[in-house]
Image (cartoon, rainbow, N blue to C red; front, side):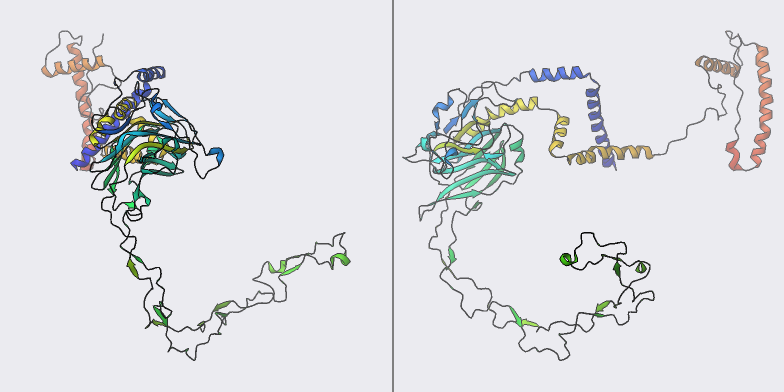
Length: 591
């Protein structure tokens, strides 16, 4: 009970504080509120940003903080295969700009995918190729869908290292080792992690797709905020995916990708054929069963009810429909061309007030003799051999790669994208082998933006209201969490019985008549005190004769009130409370 009470009290205090805060906001003058908001928006958050350099071993880092940052990147001059010539060129523009959101850092720039409905391709060599030889692989970068995203991707391609890698010819078929990042079309929100695995037997490459994240991704695509995407692959074949430094997916390259890295040890023999005498029927009709002699397959399912009788008011001689007496042959009717004219039919008025007209037929009922077509009962098939399947043979393409972590070396990072949305912002790309290096890089870039955002973002009330725009059902939650406890608490407080207020007129004490003023009450109290002590207030203007006269009047009044009181007492104890006596108030001194 105490826990219940404390819960209600906490809810009341929380809600009261909320109401006071909101009430105070609404009581302020509108102009003052707007001025305060403008001051907050104009205030510069004290966050110092300097273009960072990775604090440890890394293979690539790009902050895009200089206007000539694109000079080190290579724009593709290739044509995309399999599309119309008008849109096959990779002619989408890339620009260096600040992020458009209100949480930009002074001096911080990013690369913008500028055009929609165009192919974009740009790439950059790593400082040195990344070779998977026993250290973790980490790639991390920032993305902001500044104008939302309709259909398109914002993923990176980690291009495979080779002597003939030509970035100027970078296109959709250029070999890559890893593809990682967000992608969306329609209501399908994806976060890709795809790697190309080399078959050690055939030398062919096959894409392996990681399982889907177990979190809702939509908000990262729609809130128009900068988000940090991180992929880490360890030498033990484990992988982890982070958004804003929170893990959203994890697994193992051997068990959590599709198709599996290693093929099955056995496969079905394609040359195996099912024998002609193979019987897959588990049950068959009993060959020894015969149809009973009394079984009538021709008996109808329904028969006329033999117990039915025609209603007494049924008019058998009257047709259900008659010729319309008001109809006439049309003037343009030609019997030679149109045939003999017949009047249209209408309901017979004589049938309106009876059960029916015309030939009476009894209703039908289910035939108790009906059995339908006879079928032999089912029995177990003595020749049943089960469902046939080809025999299993050793897989001629079998291999076992227990270290899929050892992927093809990476030589460059690239973006090869098609999007129906523009102004997609990319920033702070880093490839490293140390998680702490990536974290430190994020601390000096992305996390500073989050500090500004936290200082400028609206309070909890505004956040709650904003949440209801996309999720109207949250109003129900708010009512249950805040409103319902208040209502219950209010009802509990009202439910207790109140002690009846004492009627100041229903008392044996001498009280001043109502209405009265403060001066009269104080004067009466002073005179009553003087009378009780037998002393006269020398400052009072009441004479001794007046006091004696008052005493005589009080004695007469008391005597007159004793008679009804005694009579009421004789009527029973239950009525004693109804009789009250009242003393005459002290006389106010006359001027």
